[in-house]
Length: 151
Image 1 (cartoon, rainbow, N blue to C red):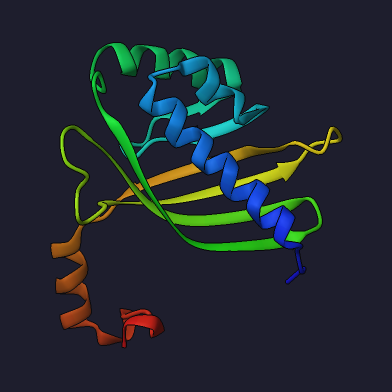
Image 2 (cartoon, rainbow, N blue to C red):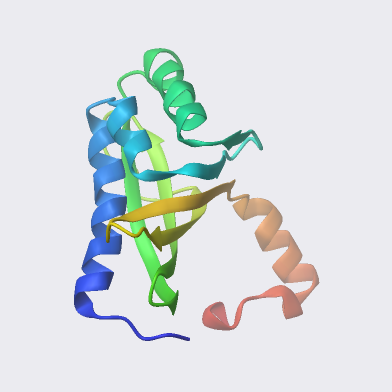
């Protein structure tokens, strides 16, 4: 695993914070600006978007329709640097209206790269909806599936 500076870690987490802020403002352009031109984006329902323009246009529609009035909750669980210009961020997240949810139902992975300009951007995003009941059943019937951090 590569080491990073505190400045790199801060810059990477600021990209994620910028996504949350752009979502709060329902600013699809600002949201998309956090992604590389050729980024990939996989939603929790399995939709695959490729490229910044696709990400911007899909979020423009989402903000106007299904996600109108929502906010984005995000919790970073881990930041790992795989080299001086690549970081993987794992977190939990959820969109919501009203009060911020106590439990975030989606697990997310962001792969960020530092561009030649020095700017960190998201090159790939994966969003997975947790299924706690299925997880509990699988852990009960096959305890070897329980992650070591939860044993």
